[in-house]
Length: 227
Ligand SMILES: Nc1ncnc2c1ncn2[C@@H]1O[C@H](COP(=O)(O)OP(=O)(O)OP(=O)(O)O)[C@@H](O)[C@H]1O
View 1 (cartoon, rainbow, N blue to C red):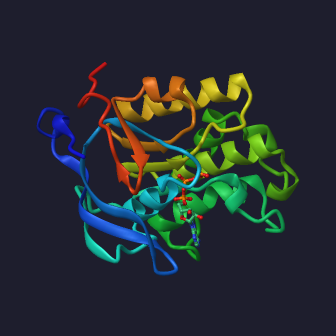
View 2 (view 1 turned 30 degrees about the vertical axis):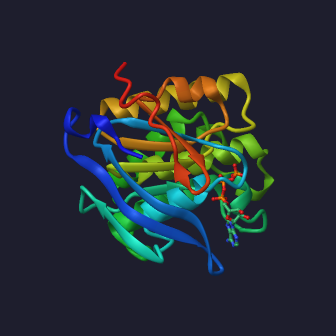
């Protein structure tokens, strides 16, 4: 796979070179080479099990490639927002505490949050429409509410690279629209966004579409489809 737009929209935010990676000794990604331009939105599409989450984990640095290299164009850590099903219902934690955890990478877990941290946490909850749930336990929320809280936590990290695993799957129309707006806002701020999706409509709004098949992103959506 190549990303023809890499030279036109600035330096790559993330580059993979001949990456093989997987789980339990079985490769899911098989020779992935790509460069995603900074400040763009990329949609990752493909069937269940095609490797979208695996690719996001490799970009986030939480899954090491067996071979090949991953380089990020920014010294700041990327923010990875996992699917809500990957987070235990049993965690005794409130919505506000969950979003505050997004600041730990900036402050460290045991340091008091600053006023600016608290303001940013509040702003992120507002953006995702979960501010009125701040005192509720994460485990007692609906799936869609929890997904929005996890995205708020991702935003609170103020990362340059935002990696989202199906952020809008299973959400109602209003919530999907809200998340679409948030992705646009992040892009306008210069953040590079990569999101896995099963929605062709959501994918059509992205600058670049990568279709996972056979362990490779097979298609670049006709190079970088500038909007
Ligand atoms: N932690 C794990 N341990 C073992 N195998 C895994 C693990 N995570 C994923 N896999 C396997 O890796 C393959 C790719 O999974 P991955 O979750 O990356 O696909 P996906 O495209 O994100 O799927 P979906 O659309 O269902 O979320 C699948 O065969 C899956 O069973």
